[in-house]
Length: 282
DNA sequence: CTGAGATCCTGGGGGC
DNA sequence: TGCCCCCAGGATCTCA
Image 1 (spheres, helix red, strand yellow):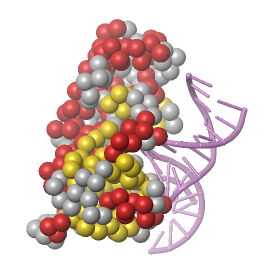
Image 2: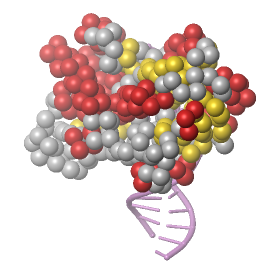
Image 3: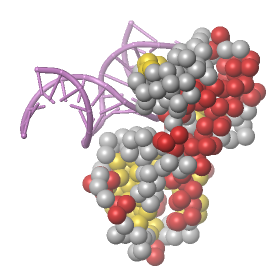
Image 4: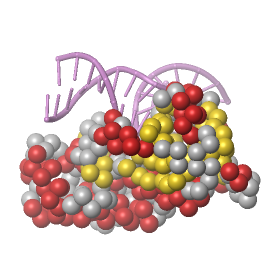
């Protein structure tokens, strides 16, 4: 599932491959995912030059020369695939991703961006660039987990406010810290050696400090590995990431903890699975 | 403010 | 082998 590291991987690759190109055409077969409407979207993007690509939490923002931006959320199974004349026949484009291409951008120079999404939860919206921050789903975000604004002070103030909640729930809430999803909340808590259902109020100062460092450490490391392809994440080349080989606990229920060999367990926190080692994490 | 549950989708896994 | 059911998951919305 695309979380911060996966989205950052896509954004970095798009920056390299499509900035400077002009959008020549747009096609879609799933209008529900296109806002404000297919016609409005087309008007904003066709003919515009791609000026830059950036990330806000798990959102991808493609800034266009004409004063508009395209905001994209990949949700669980969205993929952006960049195909050009050289790689169009690559084996990496095998199913299943090609089967679920619902939108396609034709760019200058024969390049295409194909948007595949098996579950059809992903969406994109064309808005004036000045209004990106005012988009409801962007405005609702807390501080990005890898931005300098996410610091110990912010984290401490947040935990002071959320003392009654479970730490696993706080990490997942995008309104507090943007970018952490189900994979990296479990991984960060494992690295910090803290149980996911600990009430925030029970965390000692050294545990808070450890968790803050663990969040940044895990996310940065996952970005370096081009994300986790536990399920179906693929980068813009159709290639899986590499961080799944370095997961400590996520998706490993019943398997031995890499640190101590104890069986990894799973519980529900905030309606979602949280994985942990009952021995390493306190 | 908080948490629970439903919703949006569809492939895949488990059970029979 | 085949069918049915349920689950996964990000985010939003409604309801208690």
